Amino acid sequence: MNHAASGLNALVANAVRRAPASQSALLAWPLACGSAVADRTRTLDFADGILRIEVADAGWRRELVNLAPRYLAMINKFSSATVRRIEFVLKV
Image (tube, rainbow, N blue to C red; front, side, top):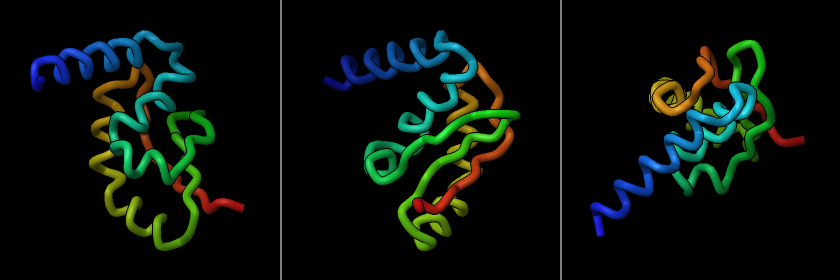
């Protein structure tokens, strides 16, 4: 089973890398943060090296800001576009 999961992860990562640069970073977000965080956030846009993510409240934003360097490294591992910064935006 582990071999199948590894193969699936590689397949998804390759698909994200082949996506248009404008979409690649958006698609990489759930891979970088995992399903629990992805289910509670929403990708807004990617422009000028900044990936904007919507979060529900200030508490979530604080937590995710602390994890941003880790997420940034993972996103840049998968994405065909270079993400310089992740900006967490409060849901309105």
